[in-house]
Image (cartoon, rainbow, N blue to C red):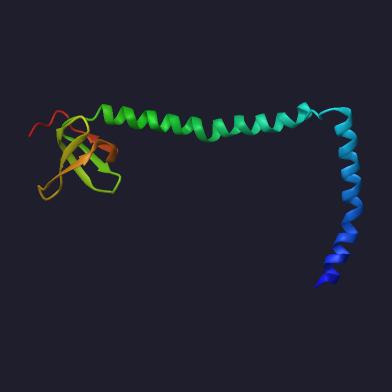
Amino acid sequence: MTHWLESWISAWAPGAVLLAQEGAEKAANGPAKPPIPFYVPLAGVAVLFYFMLIRPERRKRAEQDKLLENLALNDHIVTIGGVYGRVVSLDKESIVIRLEDDARARILRSAVARVISENRDEAK
């Protein structure tokens, strides 16, 4: 087991010594400043991250907030759990929906995934 370790150390030791000497020379000359081209790809990744992830998520969140704000009575909705219903009562944080078999369920406004149709003229 020590044979492979000794051969590995003997193969890499000269390179490590040269790197250590080069590092000592640079330290004697003062602190090394990272080159500006190093920051260009980093800035590019940050911009790409913003436009690919953060901005679309903000837009999606704004659309969802607008949908929840414009929710009205008799709107047919689908919840995030896949439950279909019709809005029969609205609260600040929750809504009551009527299910297909005339059962009612109270859900959070944030549980509304989308509005299927807006039947605001239909009053029951």
